[in-house]
Image 1 (cartoon, rainbow, N blue to C red):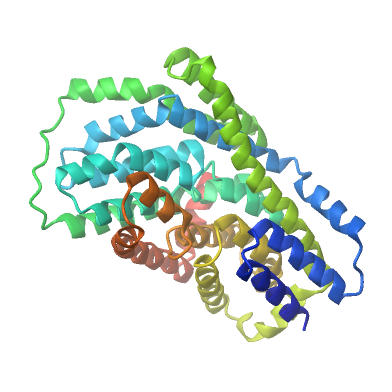
Image 2: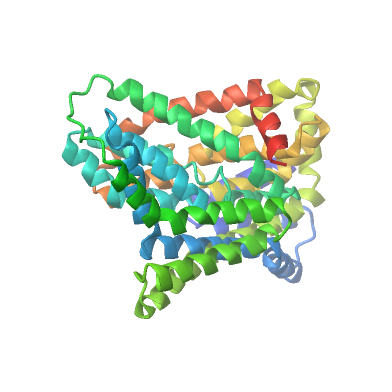
Length: 425
């Protein structure tokens, strides 16, 4: 009955058109009423406690870094470097999108920001070159979701706080799976573009490649600063967010000089608005998370799935299918906040490595960003590229299927995640 109240109140509030953050509060209030412990003061206190977290400070700083990079010229130089590096290959603009997405992912940690930047710069070029608008937009959307999987992933920060798992270990464990996603997109694009008769530009001279590398050098240094700093224990993930934001501001205003002081206020406001949405979601979800624990919903779920506890792979497959279904209706952050407190006791009971689970959980949530009808990255690419949503949805399907295949390969062969993760540890 408790599970029914939890799911029914949440879905009912969403069906009425209530924003997800307020729907979570409605769900929390309904659970409190069902448990005969309704108290507005407890409700408010849990909202405050939900946002009062030191690790979560990384979120606004990484979001600020992403905004600064897009406005301050770092993203444009990354795309230009990828263009001179692989633009001459058959179907080269597609490979440029993949390489640029990986590099941008290592800078911002935001799928929406990366997809918007790539759509602005590369999508018109791909369409003008003769590539299918839907396929081009689908590739860019699929490449954009690499950002939540590799460090500095904002999704890993939220999951790490919600699941009480080391954010640094999640960062390191996501590097190789993120590269595998990129390789999967590379092979898929090669297969789809192999029959196209689109002329490719000539290979750029080595001098131009080095010039583009020098131009993007300041931007390319940032991922190494973050990874080395975390590996050497110089700073925490939260402090890494501050380093990223300050570094991006310095490069944009002093080195590249593309971010004038007059634009700084609008950049700060944009980052603050996005941060407010994420932080309020986290705060509202804290109420439901607390009541989920009080009502022992994880215990009930463990009982329901008890037959699968002796087979971790079957359990992981069941969980991945559940997350896939939820991802078609919910954005990534609400999915993490709602499902993490329910699933983590199950994962621990089955003796599944929580870092490994976190990586697979994040990949699944990232793919959810391009699954219709709610996929926010799909909507972003369609809006920025001014392409009809149906066209983008059709174009993304082969790339989405390829990413799901590699995700389930990681479920069947955990070593694909665990072995490289221990190398980086």
